[in-house]
Image (tube, rainbow, N blue to C red; front, side, top):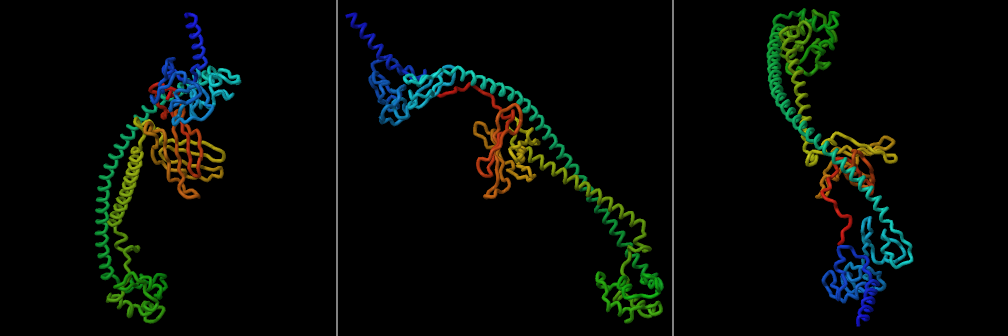
Length: 470
């Protein structure tokens, strides 16, 4: 009897070994312990354990065939493994990254798992390369972590600089507002003083003009008027001389016509002093139709030579000059305030870490073009011929909800020949230097850029698994 028990145990152990559980991750091995029955992992069905890995898909989730290659089609409606059409085989890959491969690749003569576990029953001579692959990946990850550590250190410096710069900009804005208020007060004062200087000058000018007109009417003699009208001093008046210095009383702006001047000269083209006294002088004296053109600015007149009027004129010009200077200064300060307010209204990150980029530009030459990225301003493309094209102006941040600041959009660039405007999407990546790394044009007039900077580095909160078991 004891002999028969031993034989049965040996036979059963051989059967179990022949169906060795392959392609199962460690987190699922507990479901495949030797027992009388097997419960499909999705809980849909209970089958005898000998039906596990028998090259026939009994469970809808394919969990009963984790390590066999499908040899025929069986109805499985989920992403099952092994004998099921969409089955998966788990590569343990000790020393490297574990991963799944389609069960159709098991024992197909091609090594898909670096530990060669997928070719356990084929003629392929696979070598275990997991350790070498793991070493290379670990070296790469270590390098990336060093870069990340250095990037985070630099980012912290830039955050501190950003905070200081932000405070400086705010202080600068307050100072500009104060300067604008002071200039506003000065502007009102200079306007008042200019208005007063103009008023004094105007009153003085009116008084002097009235005095000048009175003197001209009272003190002028026929001789003095004739000499005034005789511009070339040849002893006679001509049509041109009359037209130059005689005007109509009710229309001083209009120049006398040829006929009107001839009429005043008695129909003759010339008039000597004797004829003047008996003809034109009487007309001028009456003053009902024509008069001598006002000559308050002419040399020798009361207006032009009055020292008080000259002083008032200089004062008015001085006030006008000062007012213009204050107005220009006030306009300049308000422009600076507006520009600074626009800059400060931009989102520079939660700690203003991107603020330092505002005044910077970065270039990259790609074949015959030179691309320039000026963060928060614009993107341009310049050809070797010197032609520059706008690829977009600053629009917005367009990153993911988890990392809002990892992508920028620049839009409304120059029109494209196919219609629409050029635009550029800039992806920010972690690095120890701030530089433009690559530029591509995946579709016509739509550009993408890779922009590396320490402020794009994000701390790793926890070591994330390389592979999900589910």
